[in-house]
Length: 193
Image 1 (cartoon, rainbow, N blue to C red):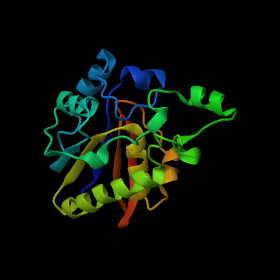
Image 2 (cartoon, one colour; image 1 turned 45 degrees about the vertical axis):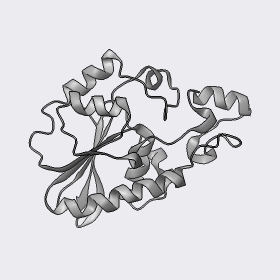
Image 3 (spheres, helix red, strand yellow; image 1 turned 90 degrees about the horizontal axis):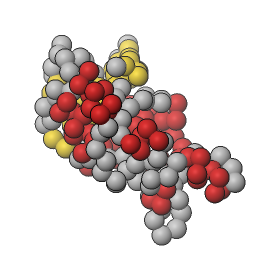
């Protein structure tokens, strides 16, 4: 049975500063490009039946520099829509709220630009997993995307609620492996470089 490899894009200006980035299409920093280049050859022993990439520039460039050939882009792999919190840090949001804010507990800003909740993203990544599972009989599936969406996807692979993605910090430019143990979904590698 094949595995799903989840690769978070390399470092951008906002991932370095801790600013929440969804729809803002930032390029990789030179360090982010180097993180992706270091992955070239890392996946050479895998036979990918599919390589799906978020349509955002930072994910597409990471795939390119890592030597991956995308078989398609997938809108379901875009980062959680932070709504009015786009471009803001957790510290800034927490200060405004007068308490510690967490996307996992509190969701995104209410009001005119509400964004998505982890549950909303869970629906999207469930669709990705539904498309990927049938392909695993013939090889592996690579998903190149963003931190929070991949963390939620990992939680859903493990049959956990979307907010359990809080447990799976994934640094920029690193990857994880979603596999099986005794025919049950398992996390078989994480935070790898």
